[in-house]
Length: 157
Ligand SMILES: [Zn+2]
Figure 1 (spheres, rainbow, N blue to C red):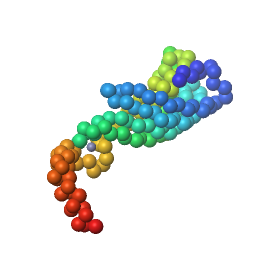
Figure 2 (figure 1 turned 30 degrees about the vertical axis):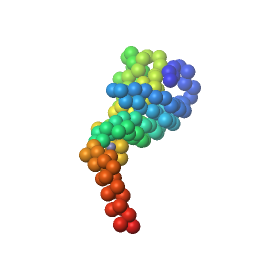
Figure 3 (figure 1 turned 90 degrees about the vertical axis):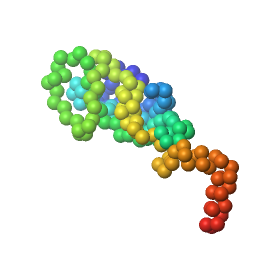
Figure 4 (figure 1 turned 120 degrees about the vertical axis):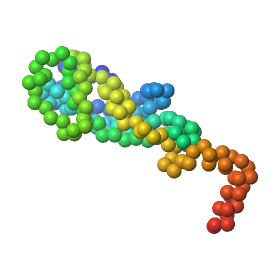
């Protein structure tokens, strides 16, 4: 969503978003972002909570996996091409926070949230924490083994 800087009345604006996009053939659903854009001098601060889902393949068993993620976004936003921007004193409250430089007249929340989501994607993609991978899956796909597995379960109970 494009927000033109000169359309912002007062010193803050509620920002809500939900959209999907593809990154490296994986579908990322931004289920919700709920936050506020604050105006602090010439620099803006976007803060809010993003709930999103990564649709990928499990690293161990290769089955489709959906990984739910939640990230608190806190980024500085600086309109580009503004000679006075360097005079503004500005400190991020989060040392790891990013600052985005935008077009001089508008910011695109979709672009910023997209980048924030991609930065949070896990390196290890598992369908579940204890996924044992392909070998275990193949073992239980054999009808005999599956039955053995079942009967050993029954004995335990
Ligand atoms: Zn798996």
